[in-house]
Length: 430
Ligand code: HAM
Image 1 (cartoon, helix red, strand yellow):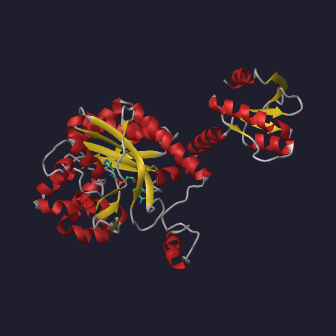
Image 2 (cartoon, protein in one colour):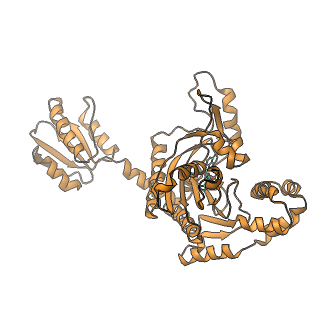
Image 3 (cartoon, rainbow, N blue to C red):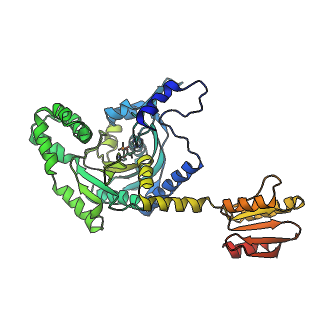
C-alpha cells in the first residue's frame, strides 16, 4: 500500500469499520510466525553476548520524552491526559525509560549493566516505506562503562544480530560516526554551544533533504559542512573503533561516515546506524553513546556513562524478504516451527475417548499433537496429518487395544499395544 493510500484511510473509515488504524498492523498467523522468528534470533544473539532481558512500561509520563529525546520525537508522540489528569504518552522509544529505571535502581546492580529488551513502540509518523505508527524494537544497552571497548562490543553485537538472519557484508553496512567530531568542528568555527543541537539535526537530515534547504539552514557553515561531508572526515577515536572491529574480523561490515549524527538529542559520542547496502530502505538500526542522559533525567542524582542501540522489526523484515538466503532461512525455520509431531486419526468414534486419553499423555510428554474435534472421514484425517506436517499418524480403530502407527514420510506402518505406545513413539520421534 502506498503512503498516500494509507493516509487516506481515516477519511474512508466508516463507523464499525473492520480495518485497523493507519500505521497499525494485524498479525495473522504467518505474520506472527515471522515476528516470532525475528524475536527468537534477537533474543538468542543478545544472550550470546551476555545481555540480560528486562522490560519497562508501555505508557510513561510525557515529560520523560520532553526533557531529552528531542523535538522530532516529541512531535510524534501518541499522548493524552489520563483519568487522573496526568500527561502520559505511549512510549516512542526505550532509552528514557532505561535511564529512569537505572537511576532508580542504580545501587542494586554491579556495573557495567548489559541489558536487552524486546517491545512495541509508538510514533505518530508520516507514513512511508519502513515507517509505521507502531513497531517492535530490540534494544541493547551497556550502562556504566566509558571505555571504547564497550562501543566496539555494541557495534559487534549489532552486526552479529543481523548476521544471525543470514545477512552478510554484501547486504548491510553499519555506518559509524562520532558526535564529538562535529562539536569540535563547531567549536573550531566559533559556533556558540546553544546552537549545536539544531545544527546536528540539520546535518542528520542532510542526506534526505534537498541540498539548498540544508544550505539555507546552515548559513555560513554550509560550505565547510558540505566539504567535510564530501571528504569523509575522521578522528583518532573512530580509527581506534574501526581497528577494534577489524581485529574481530568485522571490518567489512562497517564504514566511517561522519554524515551520521542521529536524530535523537541525547547522544554524546560514537553514534551509528545500520543500512542495507544498496540504500533502498530506511535505517535498520541505530544507536550510540548517551553519557549525560541518566544524570540529566535524575537531576544529577546518578551519573553513569551509557550506550546502546535499537533495531526495528519493520525494515528488518523487508530486508529479510528481499535477500534470498535470508528469506529461505526464515521460511525454513518458520516451516519447521509450525509442524506438529503426531496426528491422531480416530477411525472409529467408539475409540475417541481412548484416543484422547493417550493424546493427553503424549502432549504431557512434550509432543505436538492434533486430532479432529468432530467425527471426520479417515481419508480427510490423513490429509490433515499431511498438511500439518505430522511425522507420524496414530490410528485408533478396530485394532484397539492396539494402535497403528504410520510413518508419514515412508508410509511404513506397524501395530503396537496401547501400553507400549508412549515408549515406541519416543523411540521414533526422540
Ligand atoms: P531510532 O533510530 O529512533 O533509535 O530507532 C531505532 C530503529 O527503530 C530504527 O533504526 C528503525 O529500524 C526502527 N524505527 C524507528 N521508528 C520507526 C517507525 N516509525 N516505524 C518502523 N520502525 C521504526 C531509538 O529509538 C533509540 N532509542 C535507540 C537507542 C537505544 N539508543 C540508545 N539505546
